[in-house]
Amino acid sequence: MSSVLYDTPGPRARTRNVVLSVVFFAVLALVLWWAVLKLDDKGQLAGALWKPFTTSEAWTTYLLPGLGNTLKAAALSMVIALPLGAVFGIARMSDHRWVRVPAGVVVEFFRAIPVLLLMLFASEFYVRSTDIPSDSRPLYAVITGLVLYNASVLAEVVRAGILSLPKGQTEAAYAIGLRKGQTMAGILLPQAVTAMLPAIVSQLVVIVKDTALGGVMLQFPDLLNARSTLAANYANVIQSFAVVAVLYIVLNFLLTSFASWLEGRLRRSTRGTGAVLGAGTVEDLNAGDAHGAVSA
Amino acid sequence: MFDFLEGYDVLGAFWTTVQLTVLSGVGSLVWGILLAGMRVSPVPLMRGFGTAYVNIVRNIPLTIIILFTSLGLADIFGVTMGAEDFKIQGFRLAVLGLIAYTAAFVCEAIRSGINTVPLGQAEAARAIGLSFSQTLRLIVLPQAFRAVIGPLANVLIALTKNTTVAAAIGVAEAATLMKSMIENEAQTLAIGTVFALGFVVLTLPTGLLLGWLGKRLAVKR
Image (tube, rainbow over all chains, first blue to last red; front, side, top):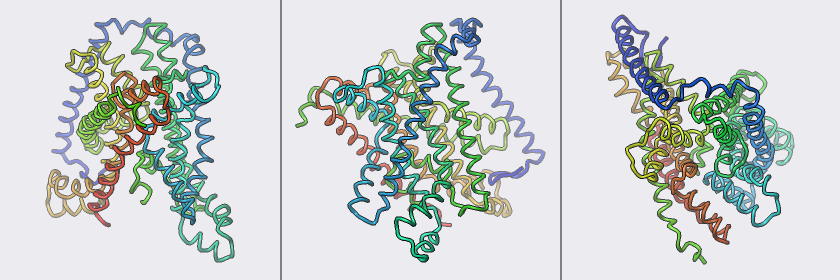
C-alpha cells in the first residue's frame, strides 16, 4: 500500500500512525460524548422517540408518500429536461451564428442562477398567469425550476459528450458522404449518449437533492416536508432528521454507485470510442461557470 | 421603470449573500483542506473518517443540513454560535451549514489535484532524500494547488448559488428578499430579472478571473 505521498510504513511510521489514531479517536469520542450528554439533557435519548419508525403508520402516512413525491418530481424533471437539454446542446454547436449565440446565452443564463430563485419565480408566475390549482402548483413550480436549471446543465453534458468523441468519427462520416444532420443523428449522438450515461445518472443525484428546496420554500409535499409534519406529530425532531437524512443518503449513494459502476464498465468496454463523461464532469458543469468547465 | 425597487434593500440583501459566500468560502477551504489531508493520510482511522464524511455529506440535500443547524443544533444541542440576536444566530448557523456541506466538495477537488501529480515525482523526491513533509511542501502541493484552481472556482460559484438556501431558515439574503418582493409587487418578471442578473454579476467575474488564473498557472504536462 503506497500513494504519491507516503511509502509503505516502516517501524517508526507505524508507531506514529498508532499515536495519531489514538489522538484522533479521542477527539471523535469527545465530540460524540458531548452530543450524547446534550441529547440526554434534553431527554432525546428516550427510546419512545424512535418508536414511531418501527410502526407502519409513520412510513405509510408520512415518509413513503414524501419519498414518492420526491422521486416523482425528480423523474419528471429528468424526463422533460433531457430532450430539452439535447436540443440546446446541439443548438450550441450549430454552424449558424443566430442559432448558436441565443442557445448559448440561454444555457449560460439558467446555469448561473440559483435553482431556488427559479422555483420561487415559477411559483409566483403560476399564481398570476395560469389557473393551475393551488394544490398542484408546488409540484409544477418545483419541476419548472428543476427543468430550466437541469436542461441547461444537460445541454452542456450533451455538448461535452459530442466534443469528447474522436474527430475521426466526423471526418469518416463526411468521407462516406453523410450530411451534417445525418452525421449528428446517426454517428455522433448515439455514441455521445453512451458516453454521457454516467454523467446523466450523477445529475439525478443533484436533482433529488434540489427537490428538497421545494419542500421547505414552496410547501411541496416531498420527503423533507413529510419530515416536518411527522416531527410535529411525534415531537422527534432529531430522530426524524436522522431517518430522513439516511433515506436521502441511501438513495443518492445507490445512484452514485450505479453511475461509477457504469463509468467503469463503459471505460473497459471494447466497443465504444473510449469517451466517457463521469461524475467529475457533472460537478464542474453544475457550478454554472462560463469558462473552462467544458473546455477540458 | 425600476420604481418597484423603492422601499426594498436589494443591495443590502445581496451584501448578505456576499458575506455568506465569503465567510463560508474561507471556512470551507480550511475545513476542506483538513478533510483532504485526512483522506490522503497514512492513518487508516483518519482516512476512514474523511471518506465517510465526504460520502455522507455530499449525498444529503443542503436544505436538510441548513434546516438541521437551526432546528437541531440550535434548538436541541444549544449551539447558538455566541449570538444573542435571533437574526445573527440564523446567519452564523447558515454559515456553519454551508461550511459543513461545501467542505466535502473542496476536499474532493483538492484530492483530485493531489492525484494529478504523477507518482514518479514523489518517488524521485524520496530518492534524492527528501522527507515526507519536504516532498509534500516542495513537490506535491505546489503542483496540486495549481491544478485545483479551476475546480475550486467551480465550488465557489456553486457556493454562491447555494447561499440562497439560507432562506430556508429566514436569513435575510437575496432569495428571501426576492420571495417577499414577488409576493408583494406586481412586476414579477422585472423583479426576477433583477435578482437573476445580481447572481450573474456575482458569479461571472469569479468564473472568468479564477478560470483564467487556473489556466495560466496549471502545470502543463
